[in-house]
Length: 314
Image 1 (cartoon, rainbow, N blue to C red):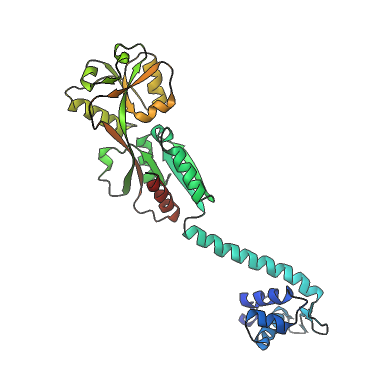
Image 2: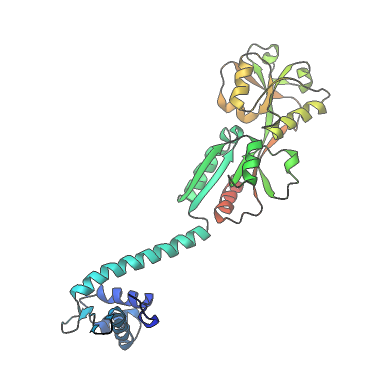
């Protein structure tokens, strides 16, 4: 059936009807007083609603009565009782839609795809999870462990929203990406437990010259591997790299198997791998950074709230 513009229901009329129907033991005058409006205006709203609900065709006009006006106090008709349930359902759905839209615009609900490296898992991940869940319990976080190289590709292709990684120098000037440092920690020397240097608690980097190095994969983990290479060159030698691996657990396994030594962020100590020992570097300022990276063009409120929480942890 086609309806004229004059037949369209107004939300305010529905709200007034529900208010009156919810106070069956009160007069319409009492309800109008509670609403802070004139009784005549409230009565007119109910009559207009009944008029718009009435069915029309060329032969007859069927009037819909929502209230039995012969009863005191006002009582709903059978049709009015059924319409009340529908009206409540409609208004509840609209209220939910408004609330959800407002919460989405504030970043309080939604979904976020975050990628991280094992360095993040071993360090600040628990703090991020606790704080973000506490402040934004209705945001669904989807975590993916990915290498630095893959994170940067996934950011540019919109497969993830935020990355947590050791940012390579080559990405610093990328105008598509924004970044901020969230953690800075020292490097440590990782040795097989039977290594001759294992008895020393603090080792100068120069003592590692000639050792076989197990390096984070230069293609997949370029930021961390380049930091390590630069640090060795700074003290006067180029490390002899005999093996590369993308995962920290793999590197530790190779060291435990006496395939070589490694330099890793201090968070590696949280893995407690049997067969390896961790020793401090004697030189100062031997630190590496973990950065949070996102697309500058991303205006998502959820992304902004996540960035805010991570910055607070830092």
